[in-house]
Amino acid sequence: MLDYTGIRCPVCDKPFQPGDDIVVCPQCGAPYHRECYQKEGKCKFDDLHAEGKSWAPPASPEAPDVSAEIKDQECPNCGKLNAHSALFCDQCGASLSGEPARHKNQKQNVQNPYGNPPPQGGNPFPGSGSPFPGGGVGGSPMPFALDPMGGVGPDELIDDIPAKEVAKLVQNNTAYYLPTFRNQKKYRRNRFNFCAFLFSGPWMLYRKQYKLGSIITVIVFALYIASTYVNIVWSSPLMVDLLTQIGVDFSSSAPISPQQWNAALQLAMENPHDTLLVLLPSLLLGLILVVMIIMGFVGNRLYMNHCVKTIHKIQQEKLPTAEYNVQMQSRGGINIPLTICLIVCYFIVNFLPNFL
Image 1 (cartoon, rainbow, N blue to C red):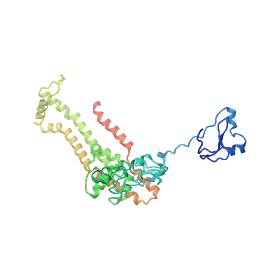
Image 2 (cartoon, helix red, strand yellow):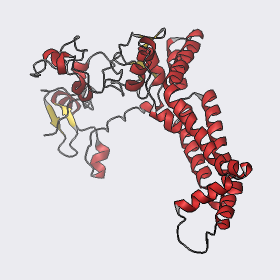
Image 3 (cartoon, rainbow, N blue to C red):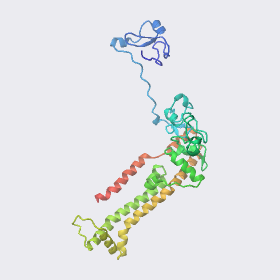
Image 4 (spheres, rainbow, N blue to C red):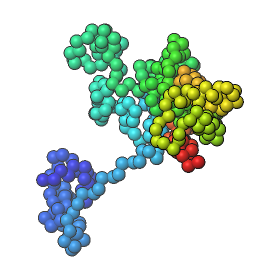
């Protein structure tokens, strides 16, 4: 027998409950309370009988599209803003209704089956038989799996702003940035950012630091284009000429030996102008490397200052809570479309010399 629990009786419009006395129409299979069917005296679905069709339970309502909703639900665990109708935080899995035991969210249970932060120095999984004193290695607290705050307390200050507010703006990869920001402010410890080193200006634009990111991007692109232009127009033709002077035969497919390169460079050094033209592309690329290294060392600090400054600006506007959360969501996070555009531009600039 089918489970009709929750389906409404066609006569009284009350949902069937477990244990209800239910009868079904022998022709179409529509369910009724026995009392309701006897009172009605017949099945209400004559149209199905005439067409020879069977009754079918109503389709379940479609879940709301949370991606189109305003993100105004703040997670009590990590501070992430979630869609208005969300039951659980999409970052850490914590319950947004305050009832993790009722909803039994699997992701939350994996992180912490008891729904509460573990006591300092304690084991968040009581009874798990951890062989380590205090629940962790060497007596240290056993960390959360996938802790979105990176061990930083929600009310711990970064500059003069609670970490949970900074998390609202950072949104992505908070487990890395929050402890990095705290260590910079509290302990004066810097951390090398490899993303800022490898991508520099584009990384800043990706993190919505548009003003400084645009400046760094323009500088790096200008140096790269200048290096490519000087190499194609002056340096490469000059090196070919110098190699020809020392007897290198370019009609053969034999590679140029290091001794031949050294001889050509020695010949170029006899003329300071030629030396500069030969070395200029490498010098320009060296400047790009210097910018990348500097960005790797100062990237986290620049991003922290950007976050603090942006939050101060939003707070000064004295907006209602809902609008405040919307502004934090829109001004923070990452900019993926712009990143894709920059990648396309990079490939265009990188492969353009092949067509010149």
